[in-house]
Image 1 (tube, rainbow, N blue to C red):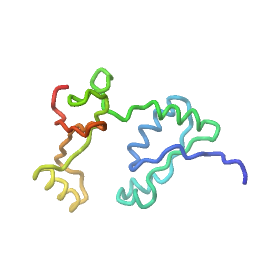
Image 2 (image 1 turned 60 degrees about the horizontal axis):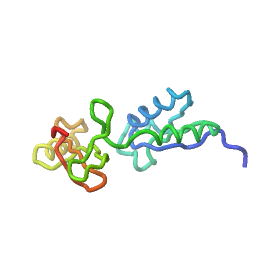
Image 3 (image 1 turned 45 degrees about the vertical axis):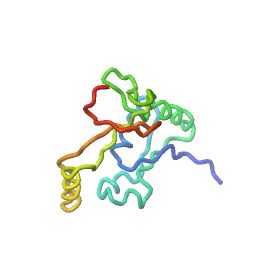
Image 4 (image 1 turned 90 degrees about the vertical axis):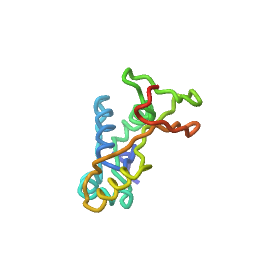
Length: 141
């Protein structure tokens, strides 16, 4: 088989996520190519069916791209760039999630799905990846 010129480095559910990571790689002078982003922008509901937005880099840049992407934290940061600590287990593994746990957020999501619009109300919580402790977004850490 002929040498591959491009290699799949990552996949994302939505193109907005892919564009953020594309920008990071391009700031490191790594050329990035996205595939299926226009299809998903047209109809986001097909993202899982087609495997999401695929991010490719040149084969010679693959190792460097993986290294750059692996240095990006998956956990939430405070305004100073420090990882947030869980008040329960003291680990720095808090993730910001949108949740539907009250009537207002449920009906907002239901109306958004019915009329193909963005939800007008979204509720967020932090969840620790270590101990699954949840706390409200506005809680002072």
